Length: 168
Image 1 (cartoon, rainbow, N blue to C red):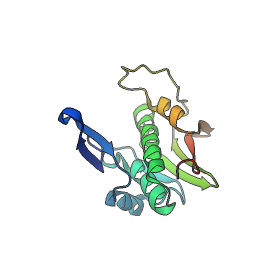
Image 2 (cartoon, helix red, strand yellow):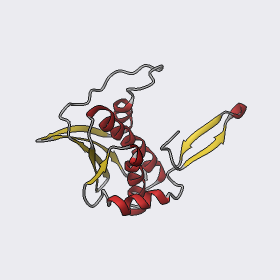
Image 3 (cartoon, rainbow, N blue to C red):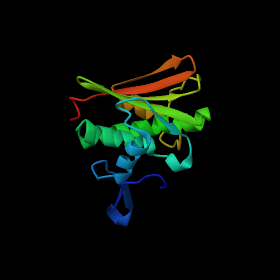
Protein backbone atom coordinates (compact mmCIF):
# COMPACT_ATOMS: atom_id res chain seq x y z
CA UNK A 1 0.00 0.00 0.00
CA UNK A 2 2.85 2.35 -0.75
CA UNK A 3 1.78 5.94 -1.23
CA UNK A 4 -1.40 5.68 0.84
CA UNK A 5 -0.40 7.84 3.75
CA UNK A 6 -3.08 8.59 6.31
CA UNK A 7 -4.34 5.00 6.31
CA UNK A 8 -6.34 3.67 9.21
CA UNK A 9 -5.93 -0.06 9.73
CA UNK A 10 -8.99 -1.63 11.28
CA UNK A 11 -10.11 -5.22 11.28
CA UNK A 12 -13.34 -6.57 9.88
CA UNK A 13 -15.00 -9.92 10.49
CA UNK A 14 -12.48 -12.70 10.85
CA UNK A 15 -9.64 -10.27 11.52
CA UNK A 16 -9.34 -9.28 7.85
CA UNK A 17 -7.74 -5.82 7.57
CA UNK A 18 -10.07 -3.11 6.31
CA UNK A 19 -8.01 -0.39 4.67
CA UNK A 20 -9.66 3.02 4.55
CA UNK A 21 -7.98 6.36 4.00
CA UNK A 22 -9.43 9.05 6.21
CA UNK A 23 -9.05 12.65 5.01
CA UNK A 24 -10.25 13.91 8.39
CA UNK A 25 -6.98 12.76 9.94
CA UNK A 26 -4.58 15.69 10.26
CA UNK A 27 -2.00 15.14 7.53
CA UNK A 28 1.19 17.12 7.97
CA UNK A 29 2.38 15.85 4.59
CA UNK A 30 -0.52 17.72 2.99
CA UNK A 31 0.60 20.98 4.59
CA UNK A 32 4.18 20.24 3.54
CA UNK A 33 2.97 19.66 -0.04
CA UNK A 34 1.28 23.08 -0.11
CA UNK A 35 4.46 24.70 1.21
CA UNK A 36 6.58 22.90 -1.40
CA UNK A 37 4.35 23.18 -4.50
CA UNK A 38 1.79 25.89 -3.80
CA UNK A 39 -1.96 26.02 -3.41
CA UNK A 40 -3.85 24.63 -6.45
CA UNK A 41 -6.84 26.79 -5.50
CA UNK A 42 -4.74 29.91 -6.16
CA UNK A 43 -2.88 28.86 -9.32
CA UNK A 44 -2.00 25.73 -11.24
CA UNK A 45 0.51 23.61 -9.37
CA UNK A 46 3.00 21.70 -11.53
CA UNK A 47 3.90 18.31 -10.10
CA UNK A 48 6.62 15.92 -11.27
CA UNK A 49 5.59 12.42 -12.34
CA UNK A 50 7.94 10.46 -10.13
CA UNK A 51 7.58 7.93 -7.30
CA UNK A 52 8.73 10.46 -4.68
CA UNK A 53 5.77 12.75 -5.36
CA UNK A 54 3.13 10.08 -5.95
CA UNK A 55 0.15 11.07 -3.89
CA UNK A 56 1.02 14.76 -3.74
CA UNK A 57 -2.07 15.68 -5.76
CA UNK A 58 -4.22 13.76 -3.28
CA UNK A 59 -2.66 15.60 -0.36
CA UNK A 60 -3.13 18.98 -2.03
CA UNK A 61 -6.80 18.28 -2.75
CA UNK A 62 -7.29 17.14 0.84
CA UNK A 63 -5.79 20.24 2.41
CA UNK A 64 -7.61 22.67 0.09
CA UNK A 65 -11.02 21.10 0.69
CA UNK A 66 -10.65 20.60 4.44
CA UNK A 67 -8.56 23.59 5.52
CA UNK A 68 -8.80 26.31 2.89
CA UNK A 69 -12.42 25.83 1.88
CA UNK A 70 -13.61 24.30 5.20
CA UNK A 71 -15.74 21.70 3.43
CA UNK A 72 -16.61 18.26 4.76
CA UNK A 73 -14.49 15.11 4.97
CA UNK A 74 -16.88 13.12 2.73
CA UNK A 75 -16.32 15.56 -0.12
CA UNK A 76 -12.57 15.54 0.54
CA UNK A 77 -12.49 11.75 0.45
CA UNK A 78 -14.46 11.57 -2.80
CA UNK A 79 -12.37 14.25 -4.54
CA UNK A 80 -9.15 12.69 -3.30
CA UNK A 81 -10.13 9.35 -4.81
CA UNK A 82 -11.07 10.94 -8.12
CA UNK A 83 -7.93 13.07 -8.39
CA UNK A 84 -5.94 9.92 -7.64
CA UNK A 85 -7.53 8.33 -10.71
CA UNK A 86 -6.74 11.38 -12.86
CA UNK A 87 -3.18 11.43 -11.55
CA UNK A 88 -2.75 7.72 -12.28
CA UNK A 89 -4.03 8.16 -15.84
CA UNK A 90 -1.74 11.12 -16.48
CA UNK A 91 1.31 9.30 -15.19
CA UNK A 92 0.53 5.87 -16.65
CA UNK A 93 -0.86 6.75 -20.07
CA UNK A 94 0.87 9.95 -21.13
CA UNK A 95 4.49 9.41 -20.11
CA UNK A 96 4.49 13.00 -18.91
CA UNK A 97 7.41 14.26 -16.84
CA UNK A 98 5.06 16.79 -15.18
CA UNK A 99 1.36 17.44 -14.86
CA UNK A 100 -0.63 20.39 -13.55
CA UNK A 101 -3.28 20.46 -10.84
CA UNK A 102 -5.82 23.27 -10.43
CA UNK A 103 -8.85 23.59 -8.16
CA UNK A 104 -11.64 26.12 -8.48
CA UNK A 105 -14.63 26.91 -6.34
CA UNK A 106 -17.76 28.78 -7.27
CA UNK A 107 -21.12 28.96 -5.58
CA UNK A 108 -22.41 25.42 -5.12
CA UNK A 109 -19.58 23.71 -7.06
CA UNK A 110 -15.94 22.76 -6.93
CA UNK A 111 -13.88 21.81 -9.96
CA UNK A 112 -10.65 19.81 -9.99
CA UNK A 113 -8.53 19.91 -13.16
CA UNK A 114 -5.48 17.92 -14.15
CA UNK A 115 -3.48 19.09 -17.18
CA UNK A 116 -1.05 16.83 -19.04
CA UNK A 117 0.93 17.21 -22.30
CA UNK A 118 -0.87 14.46 -24.23
CA UNK A 119 -3.69 15.26 -26.64
CA UNK A 120 -4.87 11.65 -26.51
CA UNK A 121 -8.40 11.56 -25.17
CA UNK A 122 -9.29 9.29 -22.28
CA UNK A 123 -11.80 6.59 -23.12
CA UNK A 124 -14.59 5.49 -20.80
CA UNK A 125 -14.73 1.71 -21.14
CA UNK A 126 -17.23 -0.72 -19.67
CA UNK A 127 -15.89 -2.44 -16.56
CA UNK A 128 -16.45 -5.90 -15.20
CA UNK A 129 -16.47 -6.87 -11.50
CA UNK A 130 -13.27 -8.88 -12.01
CA UNK A 131 -11.30 -6.08 -13.71
CA UNK A 132 -8.14 -5.19 -11.82
CA UNK A 133 -7.50 -1.92 -13.65
CA UNK A 134 -9.22 0.47 -16.03
CA UNK A 135 -11.79 1.69 -13.51
CA UNK A 136 -10.57 5.28 -13.19
CA UNK A 137 -12.90 7.01 -15.63
CA UNK A 138 -15.72 4.69 -14.59
CA UNK A 139 -15.35 5.92 -10.99
CA UNK A 140 -15.17 9.52 -12.13
CA UNK A 141 -18.26 9.05 -14.30
CA UNK A 142 -20.19 7.45 -11.43
CA UNK A 143 -19.09 9.74 -8.58
CA UNK A 144 -18.63 13.19 -10.12
CA UNK A 145 -21.60 15.36 -10.96
CA UNK A 146 -19.90 16.39 -14.22
CA UNK A 147 -16.61 15.63 -15.91
CA UNK A 148 -14.93 16.25 -19.23
CA UNK A 149 -11.80 16.92 -21.22
CA UNK A 150 -10.67 20.18 -22.80
CA UNK A 151 -8.13 19.94 -25.60
CA UNK A 152 -5.39 22.54 -25.30
CA UNK A 153 -2.82 23.70 -27.88
CA UNK A 154 -0.30 21.47 -26.07
CA UNK A 155 -2.08 18.71 -24.25
CA UNK A 156 -5.40 18.42 -22.49
CA UNK A 157 -7.16 19.24 -19.26
CA UNK A 158 -9.27 16.50 -17.69
CA UNK A 159 -11.64 17.77 -15.03
CA UNK A 160 -14.49 16.82 -12.75
CA UNK A 161 -16.99 18.89 -10.81
CA UNK A 162 -18.83 18.16 -7.58
CA UNK A 163 -21.82 19.94 -6.10
CA UNK A 164 -20.88 21.34 -2.74
CA UNK A 165 -24.33 21.81 -1.21
CA UNK A 166 -25.05 18.07 -1.46
CA UNK A 167 -21.87 17.05 0.36
CA UNK A 168 -21.05 19.64 3.01
